[in-house]
Amino acid sequence: MDALLLFLELMGIFAFAVSGSLLAARKKFDLVGSLLLASLAGLGGGVTRDVMIAQGLPVALANPLLLLPVLMAVTLVAARLLHENRLRRTMLVFDAMGLSLFCLTGTVVAFEAGLNPVACALLGLTTAVGGGTLRDVVANEVPQIMVPVGIYAMPAMLGAGLAVLFLELGVFNVWIGVGISSLVFAVRMLSLR
Amino acid sequence: MDALLLFLELMGIFAFAVSGSLLAARKKFDLVGSLLLASLAGLGGGVTRDVMIAQGLPVALANPLLLLPVLMAVTLVAARLLHENRLRRTMLVFDAMGLSLFCLTGTVVAFEAGLNPVACALLGLTTAVGGGTLRDVVANEVPQIMVPVGIYAMPAMLGAGLAVLFLELGVFNVWIGVGISSLVFAVRMLSLR
Amino acid sequence: MDALLLFLELMGIFAFAVSGSLLAARKKFDLVGSLLLASLAGLGGGVTRDVMIAQGLPVALANPLLLLPVLMAVTLVAARLLHENRLRRTMLVFDAMGLSLFCLTGTVVAFEAGLNPVACALLGLTTAVGGGTLRDVVANEVPQIMVPVGIYAMPAMLGAGLAVLFLELGVFNVWIGVGISSLVFAVRMLSLR
Image (cartoon, rainbow over the protein chains, first blue to last red):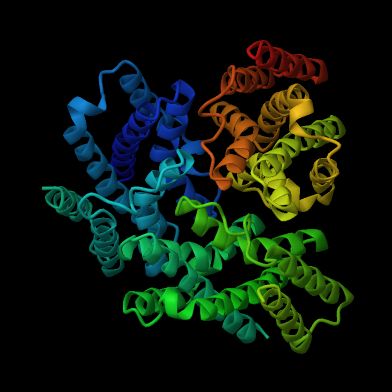
């Protein structure tokens, strides 16, 4: 299960890092700005979670593997293989994937650290929306979570809440995780129609 | 005394959370924005303090009771039982209460964690002004502490400094705490006349 | 060597704190704003690094000596002994000194905490550019690292990378440190011509 958790984290990091690099492109920032916003968007939520859990080094520092999806995202955007106009819909899909993955992985990480259920759900939500908020604040924009298209934080709250429920009941497994993530993804995407 | 400290913290959290929800209302953010700004304003100062003290989970995560005043504040503002026009004066009173309570509780928490006097005073100040600063930064506003009406940070510095003085002298007690907090509150309110 | 590291830190803190106080002056903030921006610029990068390393109290809290250069910078700017118009060039020199010192000290501190090479370089970079970014974000400006005059982050990346290389090879010493710092400083200054 830890390998699966890592895989889902990497997917989520990539999805959010792309959103950071695209924001940097829109604001005409250079490669450094792209790297910074991609890192904040992709890794910021998880680092904030790990700093609050206070059990040693944030995963993003302990495991350099987590930097790979950030570098990939920056490269793809710099090479214009991903850009906003053509792929706006695709990007919303990526962002929704990040959201649905991080509200799950964040909650599970907090649960495995032995936190109380309320704290687990809060940290799941923080992981899901923290990176995007840091991205927007550092880019000097009103955070997207404040002025969302469709509903944004609600699906993540739902996902974190469901995850902590099943974890506390002791019946959480891979399939339930996949189900919760798919539900969050579906609710987010439907709200965009 | 720990029960008193907890009670004062809850009061301060409520006071600042109301300021966050009112800012969200002024900026036309939705319920999620209200929750986020109320949480940042009410809990952000204490979480920043606890992350720096680095002695385990922030109190706001360890004790879900601290979330209650945030939810109350969001509910009261959403139900329009508290709104800015009618209660601007009342809100300044709440904010001054938060300031006077947090500069005291922040200093005491740092002292009990065994920090040096300068660090205790700094963390008292951080607890008092950190939440409001996070609130304003995430809402993409110039932080109020930078462009204050009346004097804002000075009374909090005074309160944190006095608290650490009495703590170091070993003569700090409930009445001295109440006295310091009342002094900070009075100085802040007088500066608004 | 630890005394040298401390001395270099103090120099870097002073250089960045001056940049914070000058920004406060330009934005017409009062003394409190000057103190806050000087603290964020001078100490923010190191505190962020220490919070992520998660091995106890940030140095800026553990050792009150680190507050002295901040107070000096605020005083010099308040007394108008340093101001922007006359000393713009001088200030760019100070800022470049801060950058070249912090990318080195940040990397060394992370290495001494036992982190992996990638994390050491990342934290060196974070220490170098984190304070300035916090300064600009709290002042509600687009961070300078996003819209730099000349090249800014690249020399810091180079310095952190070289430092970690020599540290890993076990051949790092004072002269190599001075050499790296001088190289970063030179690259930064040349990019401003």
